[in-house]
Image (tube, rainbow, N blue to C red; front, side, top):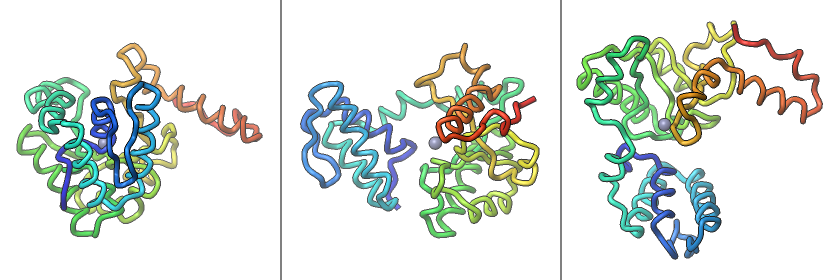
Length: 230
Ligand SMILES: [Zn+2]
Protein backbone atom coordinates (compact mmCIF):
# COMPACT_ATOMS: atom_id res chain seq x y z
CA UNK A 1 0.00 0.00 0.00
CA UNK A 2 1.18 3.53 -0.74
CA UNK A 3 1.66 5.61 2.39
CA UNK A 4 2.63 9.20 3.13
CA UNK A 5 5.22 7.99 5.60
CA UNK A 6 4.56 9.10 9.12
CA UNK A 7 2.67 12.23 8.04
CA UNK A 8 -1.09 12.42 8.17
CA UNK A 9 -2.99 13.68 5.14
CA UNK A 10 -4.28 16.80 6.93
CA UNK A 11 -0.76 17.92 7.86
CA UNK A 12 0.34 17.55 4.23
CA UNK A 13 -2.77 19.36 2.96
CA UNK A 14 -2.23 22.25 5.34
CA UNK A 15 1.46 22.58 4.45
CA UNK A 16 0.70 22.30 0.70
CA UNK A 17 -2.06 24.90 0.81
CA UNK A 18 0.20 27.18 2.83
CA UNK A 19 2.78 27.08 0.01
CA UNK A 20 0.70 26.65 -3.12
CA UNK A 21 -1.01 29.39 -5.04
CA UNK A 22 -3.39 27.94 -7.64
CA UNK A 23 -3.01 24.49 -6.16
CA UNK A 24 -4.58 21.76 -8.28
CA UNK A 25 -6.35 19.53 -5.84
CA UNK A 26 -7.59 15.98 -5.91
CA UNK A 27 -8.83 15.79 -9.51
CA UNK A 28 -11.37 18.54 -8.83
CA UNK A 29 -9.82 21.62 -10.39
CA UNK A 30 -7.61 24.49 -9.29
CA UNK A 31 -7.94 26.04 -5.86
CA UNK A 32 -7.15 29.69 -5.27
CA UNK A 33 -4.99 29.92 -2.15
CA UNK A 34 -3.95 33.55 -2.57
CA UNK A 35 -5.10 34.72 0.85
CA UNK A 36 -5.60 33.33 4.34
CA UNK A 37 -9.37 32.89 4.07
CA UNK A 38 -9.10 31.06 0.73
CA UNK A 39 -6.37 28.84 2.17
CA UNK A 40 -8.60 27.82 5.08
CA UNK A 41 -11.48 27.05 2.71
CA UNK A 42 -9.22 25.08 0.36
CA UNK A 43 -7.76 23.00 3.18
CA UNK A 44 -11.27 22.23 4.48
CA UNK A 45 -12.51 21.24 1.04
CA UNK A 46 -9.51 19.01 0.30
CA UNK A 47 -9.71 17.36 3.69
CA UNK A 48 -13.42 16.70 3.14
CA UNK A 49 -12.79 15.12 -0.27
CA UNK A 50 -9.93 12.96 0.95
CA UNK A 51 -11.79 11.91 4.09
CA UNK A 52 -14.15 9.80 2.03
CA UNK A 53 -11.52 8.39 -0.34
CA UNK A 54 -10.19 4.83 -0.10
CA UNK A 55 -6.84 4.55 1.70
CA UNK A 56 -4.72 3.97 -1.42
CA UNK A 57 -6.22 6.91 -3.32
CA UNK A 58 -5.97 9.17 -0.30
CA UNK A 59 -2.25 8.46 -0.01
CA UNK A 60 -1.61 8.97 -3.74
CA UNK A 61 -3.59 12.22 -3.88
CA UNK A 62 -1.85 13.54 -0.78
CA UNK A 63 1.58 12.81 -2.26
CA UNK A 64 0.51 14.48 -5.54
CA UNK A 65 -0.57 17.61 -3.65
CA UNK A 66 2.75 17.78 -1.82
CA UNK A 67 4.64 17.43 -5.09
CA UNK A 68 2.70 20.28 -6.71
CA UNK A 69 3.38 22.53 -3.77
CA UNK A 70 7.08 21.67 -3.88
CA UNK A 71 6.93 20.17 -0.42
CA UNK A 72 9.68 17.91 0.91
CA UNK A 73 7.74 15.36 2.98
CA UNK A 74 10.83 14.03 4.73
CA UNK A 75 11.86 17.53 5.78
CA UNK A 76 8.31 18.30 6.93
CA UNK A 77 8.27 15.17 9.09
CA UNK A 78 11.59 16.19 10.66
CA UNK A 79 10.23 19.64 11.34
CA UNK A 80 6.97 18.49 12.93
CA UNK A 81 7.81 15.30 14.79
CA UNK A 82 10.05 14.29 17.65
CA UNK A 83 12.98 12.01 16.89
CA UNK A 84 13.84 8.78 18.73
CA UNK A 85 16.21 10.55 21.10
CA UNK A 86 13.50 12.99 22.18
CA UNK A 87 10.96 10.19 22.52
CA UNK A 88 13.45 8.24 24.64
CA UNK A 89 13.81 11.22 26.97
CA UNK A 90 10.04 11.40 27.39
CA UNK A 91 9.74 7.64 27.90
CA UNK A 92 12.22 7.90 30.79
CA UNK A 93 10.16 10.52 32.64
CA UNK A 94 8.06 9.39 35.61
CA UNK A 95 4.38 9.11 34.72
CA UNK A 96 5.04 8.98 30.96
CA UNK A 97 4.25 6.01 28.76
CA UNK A 98 4.78 5.69 25.02
CA UNK A 99 1.92 3.91 23.28
CA UNK A 100 1.50 2.66 19.71
CA UNK A 101 -0.45 4.39 16.92
CA UNK A 102 0.07 2.14 13.80
CA UNK A 103 2.95 2.50 11.32
CA UNK A 104 1.36 4.64 8.60
CA UNK A 105 -1.74 6.17 10.22
CA UNK A 106 -4.48 4.47 8.17
CA UNK A 107 -8.17 4.17 8.93
CA UNK A 108 -7.86 0.64 10.31
CA UNK A 109 -11.50 -0.26 9.66
CA UNK A 110 -10.92 0.38 5.93
CA UNK A 111 -8.12 -2.21 5.69
CA UNK A 112 -8.44 -5.97 5.32
CA UNK A 113 -7.74 -7.94 8.46
CA UNK A 114 -4.15 -8.88 7.61
CA UNK A 115 -3.13 -5.31 6.73
CA UNK A 116 -4.81 -3.89 9.85
CA UNK A 117 -3.01 -6.43 12.06
CA UNK A 118 0.33 -5.55 10.48
CA UNK A 119 -0.23 -1.81 11.07
CA UNK A 120 -0.98 -2.49 14.73
CA UNK A 121 1.79 -4.99 15.51
CA UNK A 122 4.61 -3.44 13.44
CA UNK A 123 4.02 0.01 14.93
CA UNK A 124 4.34 -1.48 18.40
CA UNK A 125 7.39 -3.60 17.54
CA UNK A 126 9.32 -0.62 16.12
CA UNK A 127 8.77 1.36 19.35
CA UNK A 128 9.84 -1.63 21.44
CA UNK A 129 13.04 -2.04 19.42
CA UNK A 130 13.97 1.63 19.23
CA UNK A 131 13.15 2.61 22.81
CA UNK A 132 13.47 -0.69 24.66
CA UNK A 133 10.19 -0.10 26.50
CA UNK A 134 7.01 -2.08 27.03
CA UNK A 135 4.19 -0.92 24.77
CA UNK A 136 0.92 -1.81 26.47
CA UNK A 137 -1.33 0.99 25.23
CA UNK A 138 -2.68 1.98 21.83
CA UNK A 139 -4.37 5.01 20.22
CA UNK A 140 -6.40 4.32 17.06
CA UNK A 141 -5.24 6.43 14.12
CA UNK A 142 -8.08 8.89 13.38
CA UNK A 143 -10.06 7.05 16.05
CA UNK A 144 -13.52 8.32 15.14
CA UNK A 145 -16.71 6.57 14.10
CA UNK A 146 -16.14 4.44 11.01
CA UNK A 147 -12.35 4.31 11.43
CA UNK A 148 -12.25 1.75 14.27
CA UNK A 149 -14.93 -0.56 15.56
CA UNK A 150 -15.55 -3.94 17.22
CA UNK A 151 -13.15 -5.77 14.86
CA UNK A 152 -10.30 -3.41 15.75
CA UNK A 153 -11.13 -3.50 19.47
CA UNK A 154 -10.85 -7.31 19.33
CA UNK A 155 -7.56 -7.13 17.37
CA UNK A 156 -6.04 -4.84 19.96
CA UNK A 157 -7.00 -7.30 22.69
CA UNK A 158 -5.57 -10.22 20.72
CA UNK A 159 -2.28 -8.32 20.25
CA UNK A 160 -1.98 -8.08 24.03
CA UNK A 161 -2.56 -4.35 24.52
CA UNK A 162 -4.10 -3.45 27.89
CA UNK A 163 -5.97 -0.33 26.79
CA UNK A 164 -6.76 1.64 23.64
CA UNK A 165 -8.23 5.09 23.08
CA UNK A 166 -10.54 6.24 20.30
CA UNK A 167 -11.24 9.94 19.68
CA UNK A 168 -14.66 9.69 21.32
CA UNK A 169 -15.13 12.83 23.40
CA UNK A 170 -16.09 11.78 26.88
CA UNK A 171 -14.83 11.45 30.43
CA UNK A 172 -14.13 8.06 31.99
CA UNK A 173 -17.20 6.31 33.36
CA UNK A 174 -17.44 3.23 35.61
CA UNK A 175 -18.73 1.18 32.66
CA UNK A 176 -15.48 1.82 30.76
CA UNK A 177 -13.90 -0.96 32.79
CA UNK A 178 -15.79 -3.30 30.44
CA UNK A 179 -14.45 -1.57 27.33
CA UNK A 180 -10.77 -0.88 27.88
CA UNK A 181 -10.05 -1.08 24.13
CA UNK A 182 -12.65 1.61 23.42
CA UNK A 183 -11.79 4.45 25.80
CA UNK A 184 -12.28 8.20 25.17
CA UNK A 185 -9.21 10.35 24.42
CA UNK A 186 -8.09 13.87 25.35
CA UNK A 187 -6.06 15.04 22.30
CA UNK A 188 -3.13 17.35 22.97
CA UNK A 189 -1.66 18.34 19.63
CA UNK A 190 0.14 21.58 20.35
CA UNK A 191 -1.99 23.61 17.95
CA UNK A 192 -4.54 24.95 20.39
CA UNK A 193 -3.22 23.98 23.79
CA UNK A 194 -0.39 25.31 25.84
CA UNK A 195 1.10 23.81 29.03
CA UNK A 196 -1.15 25.94 31.23
CA UNK A 197 -4.26 24.41 29.66
CA UNK A 198 -3.20 20.77 29.89
CA UNK A 199 -4.21 20.33 33.54
CA UNK A 200 -7.66 21.68 32.76
CA UNK A 201 -8.01 19.40 29.72
CA UNK A 202 -6.99 16.17 31.45
CA UNK A 203 -9.28 16.80 34.45
CA UNK A 204 -12.19 16.36 32.03
CA UNK A 205 -14.02 19.59 32.78
CA UNK A 206 -13.90 21.02 29.20
CA UNK A 207 -15.35 17.74 27.91
CA UNK A 208 -18.17 17.84 30.46
CA UNK A 209 -18.94 21.49 29.70
CA UNK A 210 -19.03 20.73 25.96
CA UNK A 211 -21.42 17.85 26.57
CA UNK A 212 -23.65 20.06 28.74
CA UNK A 213 -23.69 22.70 26.02
CA UNK A 214 -24.67 20.16 23.36
CA UNK A 215 -27.37 18.69 25.56
CA UNK A 216 -28.73 22.16 26.37
CA UNK A 217 -28.90 22.97 22.66
CA UNK A 218 -30.69 19.66 22.10
CA UNK A 219 -33.21 20.60 24.74
CA UNK A 220 -32.44 17.84 27.23
CA UNK A 221 -31.92 18.48 30.92
CA UNK A 222 -28.18 17.92 30.48
CA UNK A 223 -26.50 18.70 33.76
CA UNK A 224 -28.31 16.02 35.73
CA UNK A 225 -27.31 13.40 33.20
CA UNK A 226 -23.58 13.97 33.61
CA UNK A 227 -21.40 12.70 36.42
CA UNK A 228 -18.29 14.78 37.04
CA UNK A 229 -14.98 12.89 37.03
CA UNK A 230 -13.52 12.22 40.48
ZN1 LIG B 1 -2.92 10.29 14.85
